[in-house]
Amino acid sequence: MAETKFNIAVLIDGDNAQAKLIKEIFEEVSKYGKATIRRIYGDWTRSDMNSWKEIVNKYSINPIQKFSYTSGKNSTDSALIIEAMDILHTKSIDGFCIVSSDSDYTGLAKRIREEGLFVMGIGRKTTPIAFVSSCEIFTFSENLVAELEVIPEEQTPLETSSTTREETPKSPKEPRGKQFPDIDMRVIDKAFEISTNEEDQAFISTIGSSLRKIDPSFDSRTYGFKKLTQLFKSIDKYEIVGNEVDGVKHLLVRLRK
Image (cartoon, rainbow, N blue to C red; front, side, top):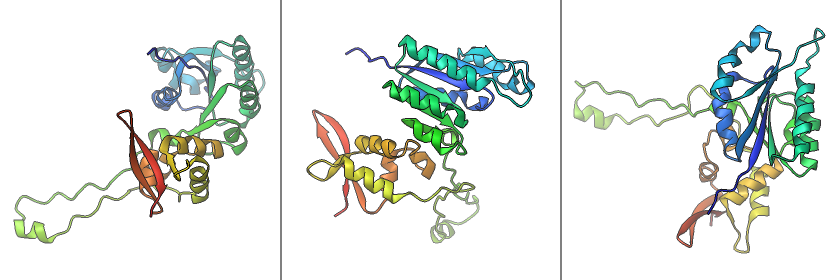
């Protein structure tokens, strides 16, 4: 069976995005499609754009030069918006990814959705809610690199006796140096409710889609879990069960009895 192509235009606000995360950005986009158009906008005469210069060739990104004609005014956002509309009307792609934390792209995201195309955003957690909500999916850049750090198990000296080792309980691995917010159970419960079948069970993938519809920025990584399955396993009121269909195992969520 041939692989279905889903082409995405990745448009990067070079004045606003983080060059060090470019690898993780394209990995995130690849979850939803292929980044066929890759463009980055900015004033390349400025020193703060130097961090992008080696990256554009490595990741085959087309740099677009936009001079700042007036002090305090940014022409990058207007250039990105104009080119996005040009791409939109060519009907050569299936979706967009806007990499920025700037609320100026809110109208663009809305316009893309009105055309029935997929639109995702990638930006910092400080991104205004208006832009976040205008996207179908919004990924916080902090989640692209956030890993749950653990305290390593204490190394017991070689001269310590076996009796001492047995009597000394090991410290459990705990998060270190990073605080995660509490899970909003109202959102979780609502997503489960609208995803359940006649047997009051829901596929984990269906719940994930419902969560994104309720909150485009919902991401299990925000709460310290790499996968949504791990998040649900941490919630006492729910349990994960397996269901095999045609030899393929699917994960279902149901209320714990």
